[in-house]
Amino acid sequence: MTIGNVAPKEERESRKAKAIFDEKAPLLPRRQEEDVRFDEFPGASFTGAVFNLSTTIIGAGIMALPATMKVLGLGLGIAMIIFMAVLTDASIEMLLKFSRAGKLASYGSLMGYAFGKYGRTFLQICVVINNIGVLIVYMIIIGDVLSGTTSSGVHHAGVLEGWFGDHWWNGRTFILFVTTLCIFSPLACFKRIVHSIDNELEDSTQIKGVVRTSLALCSSVYIMTSLFGFLLFGDATLDDVLANFDTNLGIPYGSLLNDAVRVSYAAHLMLVFPVVFFPLRLNLDGLIFPSSRLLVLDNCRFALISIGLIALIFIGANFIPSIWDAFQFTGATAAVCLGFIFPAAITLRDNYSLATKKNKIVAVFMIVLAVFSNLVAIYSDAYALIKKSPSPRE
Image (cartoon, rainbow, N blue to C red; front, side, top):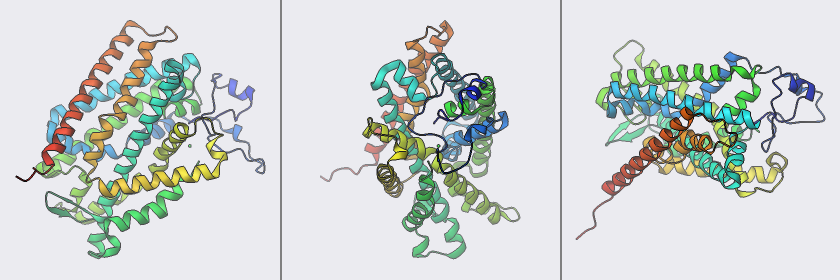
């Protein structure tokens, strides 16, 4: 998402003369009746940009990391987090390098320039798949936190069940329905991430430092969460580690700490929901109505797409058994394409003849690694589904 041509030309030139192209909708609505000057926004600070990016990066996936440690072991698990941070830094650097060269202010514009409308369309499809999966995971976690979950025949009580006992009104489906209707739906109506953060920086030369600081911060949080989560619960660690926080920690005020951890993270997911939902709605609209007027100018289309997506996410959260299942699908397909395959492909395409030999080697390594991991993940997912399916009766 970009700021669009909101500021006057003279003030835009004072911010490194970045050419910003409107991607479907302005960051802030232009309203003639308001005597407000949006061009007075001085630009985001370094600290603000770091925390904005970090908030976007740290999502629902962090809750599955302790279970990952249970599978890989602590040493290999921590090494993989650090390795992925380094690889992500290289990927983002590729995106920014070619975006700056073409004065392009969004991922979609960059893919469209490199590979035409088909490249842009493929990107939009991946964003839709990935973000729907992420939001379904958000809702599954909220259901686990508030209403509880059952794993391997063992029920783990949710916060509301622990406070008030087992009632129809704190059942999973009803709680998710109320949460969707009263929280997600209003938040989804708000009309707003490396590119957008780059566009908003007061000094655009700071973006590399912002990215690396944010990756270091997020990697530290990931390592601490996965390490202490696994050490705390050991082999009993669940796919969603928040579900483990119904146990007695053996410390004073342990139950209060359990509830605080679960409720605070659920609240965080609720607040991050519109950040993920915005590009989902925008890209789906671009796929279905590529030639229509701006989405923010068509209330009927805006409402239909929003309602349809929220309904799909709600249904998915009720029928997909765990966050692990959702992550397996989106992680093995769209997420890898968005994070590594597309940036590497843009680098190899090299429309501006900027890629160095090192850049191309890293790009080839990314694609090979991503394709290999995709094949392994898809095979393991298919094998797990076949193994779980009941054998036909003789």
